[in-house]
Image (tube, rainbow, N blue to C red; front, side, top):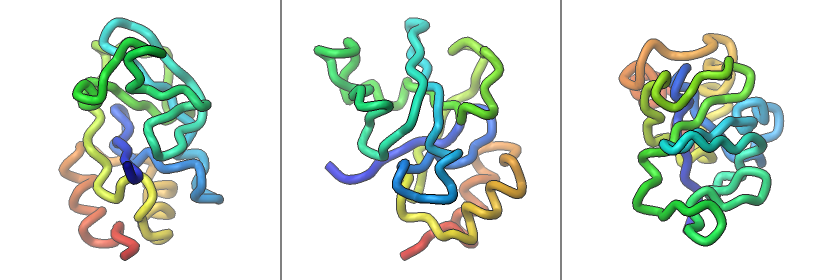
Amino acid sequence: MGFFSKTCAKTNIPVVASHLGQFNQFSQVVVLYPDGRKITGEYDGYGRVNGIDLLDADTVGFSGKEWDALKFVIQKHYNGEEYDDLGKSGRELGQGFFLSREFLAHCELKGGFKNYAGYKSAYRKMGDSL
């Protein structure tokens, strides 16, 4: 499986793979499960935080079909919210890896988007690195 990711449930900023150098702040996350569990650390772009497979039924009791239920929050924006306090984490259009530097710099400067639609609009204008 290739890269895949989500957007931050608070800011709609893309959660990126840890391989993206200067934008690693967007790979430091808190992942919240519907049952109240949380995993904190670095997202690798392949569904793992600190080497823990977020969707491994044997390890975390969660299967791939439940990916949409997970909520990601970029660590620097996390203030102890619980799962039900947060909106949805949308699907990251650049798969957490295929993003232009211009778009990521814009996300860093802007600090977030009002909603997922705002993120999608900005991504379509400058986000795709291909």
